[in-house]
Length: 459
Image 1 (cartoon, rainbow, N blue to C red):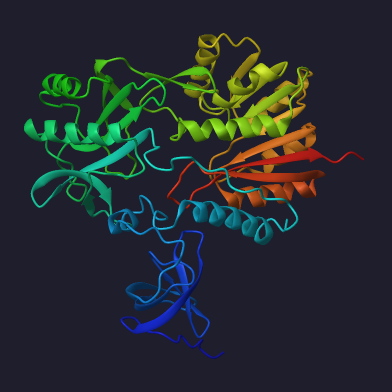
Image 2 (cartoon, rainbow, N blue to C red; image 1 turned 90 degrees about the vertical axis):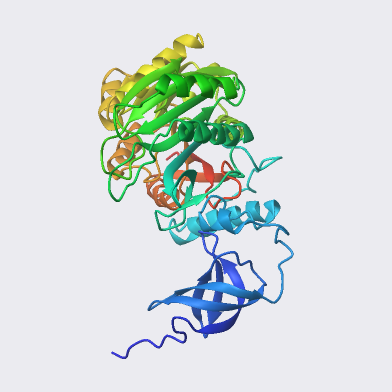
């Protein structure tokens, strides 16, 4: 067997024309059919690049000179936002970002799901696709001997100091700046992950989109945080919207951001916000969609796709704190939510009571086990709603769903690849995949949320 010829070598300079974008937003330029992946490169652009790595089937390069410019390029861009991965698509005009995501979803359905005929609708975007994030998790490290906040350079733990994060709510950016200056004043030592020394690991800021309430979480290595009362007082003086300051203690040498123990240093344990007219309490550890306005679009799309009737019985698997189940409760007879995390189920029940929703029932446990219990009690679903994590649905779960045989399935996904895989299994199990709607919850990035509608094929 002859060794495959690689037409480029590391540190070689070559000219390429960018032909496409990868699913990660890298430009693809080819040399004798051999693909080079290049940051900050857009289709049609001609450039001279330096080869950084040449593997057996593809390589990586960086642009030295751009000889032509795509009509879809944003005139002013930030290398920092690309190098850190905060906004890897911000150099692409927004309309083209939306088209890119629609194309990526369609290609994935065809390649992985073998579903080329499923309509993929145009991506629903934002009117103002910047400063949308309601949550920030910002590492704290020492840079040139000084405590800094920022973001890690991609594929490294080298902190790049940043003040304007572009996609975060501007009040959050301002809050991070003030907290950084205050902890420096009180000589709080930044965390050193190599030596596992220092104390302050991360600053987390959450802000209610509608309420404006702000929570600051100081993630520390040690239980002791000297001057925490003075630090808290000064944070609130500088940012009056802060209603909660939490110390989260994470003593482990790990990449996991938060530890298990929380201490309230000031104010409330939670902040409140609204989603589709319902009120939710958000704790330091709660999962809550980071783009509130687009989450409302996502959930409303799911509601519209389902075309609920007042007599429908709905099962919401992976219900979390109940945001989806409670959003659709007004449209149906009964909603049953199941979630494996008991604390989330407790929050879902509290949220139902808080919003005076009386037709929603939440149970903790594995979905398959709870499904069996419900079936034994004579509970069957007209519509199943699923919103799993990135890994998608377990094959055993899908087998249980096929036995339950709901008339419709609404699948909310954050990963086109696992969605395509699972849709194939449902299609093989007598479900028709009617359509897929991409929703842009994460503008300026390559991530996309999806809503897929399936209906059972009658014999």
